[in-house]
Image 1 (cartoon, rainbow, N blue to C red):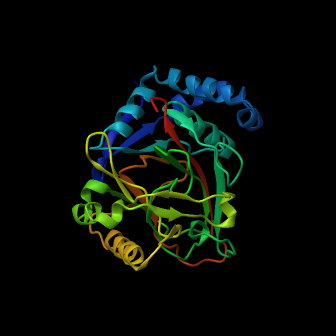
Image 2 (cartoon, rainbow, N blue to C red; image 1 turned 45 degrees about the horizontal axis):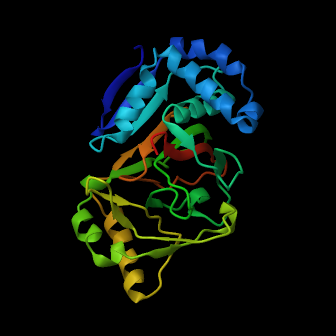
Length: 299
């Protein structure tokens, strides 16, 4: 196989997959067969695109992604395509991210955009109802899919473009590296059902109930949590959530790193939390991100 795999400089848990320009060149023609509109309207075209991607890498890329994402010792990869020229534009990145997603599973419907993916920007000025777009506010550690009925096994975040950006580093934390995991996951309150809602921009007209912590089939704790969306029912739940938030943000085992433009973080959503540091203020600040989240084919 022609892609390379290495450990991230900040953690051996994080695997880095580098895609060479010569291999990406081979994708230009098969990717042109699929317009963004056809990918949005015809779900089967996404499988065809993903197969073209896998064939360039001798069908090893899908195997590698599935192995990394399902291994609790790793569970996350940063995919770094060599795209230092204009022939690989943002449309190409949408297609590459789509291909990566469909090599491992089916994306969920994203109600925020009414598509299988979402694209959104972070700018200097913001009047949104979510921390997601607040450039100068810390985006605390969380998982995705806390407020929807669908399962969310994995998450893709791709940095499409940025201008006038400093700060805003990515932050991730493996659940097993968290100093307070045993204390918080075994607390009976963390195993109670919490009510989870969402702001209007998410376009979800219902609320769900589930605990913060659930053990998987092997008895290992998994987490489903974001600070903005739980609606505590009593003092006990409210104080538990405050302690949970404090303990996560104070962790000394967070992995903090800049993500280069064009790169993708592909993570298991059950035992990796993610967030973002605040940006340094600049009136021309702009960052565009793409998000895809979904389930493994086996689920």
